[in-house]
Length: 64
Image (cartoon, rainbow, N blue to C red):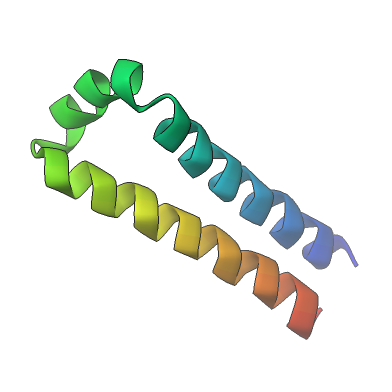
């Protein structure tokens, strides 16, 4: 039960963070480009983070 709650919390955190970056993309993009060095890679990182959050939510739902 504790692991399930942790996985749910992490999944929601990753999805919320990636959605916040997508919604408020303009102010955050300059900061993110400094880290990732390319604008295209920032978009891929956001997409993979959202997918990772969904996978974590599914793991918590199906396995625990």
